[in-house]
Length: 463
Image (cartoon, rainbow, N blue to C red; front, side, top):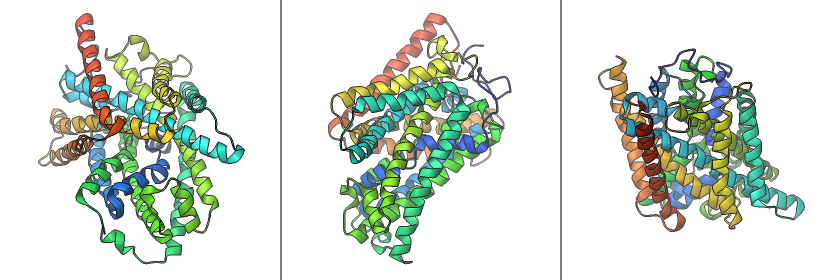
């Protein structure tokens, strides 16, 4: 029956290669979508501008919230593996219109995150190229270049994609860990009491900083989009989801504490710094690491672009199978066994808003912030709906136990609070328009869902 959710079976591969990715390559998909190198370089300073000495606390709280969501997603992933990721889980339990909401939200989330990291890529590329040659280069050209290469790799072979992302992120994170260690050693083995006492932090600043801190984690669940492509998916995928949440949370919290500490030592304001890693590298006594981290951030942003296109294409593939997108997008390439048409469509969709904004003179960091915030709406809504649906899913599979609803409801409440934090107080400038853009997009997606269901007379997901 068309549109029904499927449990994992060896034949449910949708034309994709089956069980070719190792546990580390599966983990690399989630880690690369998070793009961990960009958080110390770009996101932590933004959180510090709001939370100040409470920046590390914002990341601790964000880690707890994300881990709650990860535990819920892992429960699904132990019983089902599909390229549709959270959309598949939602379609097993939620009413059709709500599972369609998850599908469209998740697709937007991955595509907009791709747009965000493309914006970050042309920002860092131009900084490095200007330092090396004294000249700036076309932002549109740089954005098109990184997207084109990412589309080609995602189109060609998912295993090449996963291995490349794994080594890129490992190298980038290693350089940052070296800098963090140098900063702690030079500071001496004693605590920064200004940070531990949360001196100067306000409740509203912590709340707004927490919302931004959550953006650092979005996409941590994207290993679930690999479905049957992962080796032993019912074990490796849930492990990858939980591991990525824990590892990212520990890394971000350590970086947040150390960056604020380093700027205290330098007597500067992290929240106002335009080049934080250069300042920290000087404080750590290794100025060259600042340049290496910027290069690492550039390469990490490329890996993030590749990971987002990889994930978005697989969600679109299953949406096409279930009647939410054109049927031709549900076909895999005959030789490459990748969702080739969906890769091209999602990659192009990620590039277009960046190209338009770049052509109008928007900075790469502005694009990174705007598109990243838009993506956050999609992720939060998808996370919340999937978590709330988990108790019913467990009942349907005879796995419900007393107290099993506690973690899902805590996770759902955490995501609801994060969503409220995005709406109130009303953001100024372009950020204030993003909720309306998301709602308009979601409305269009749901209208298409209704139209396709009536015109084809099919049984849509969740029925």
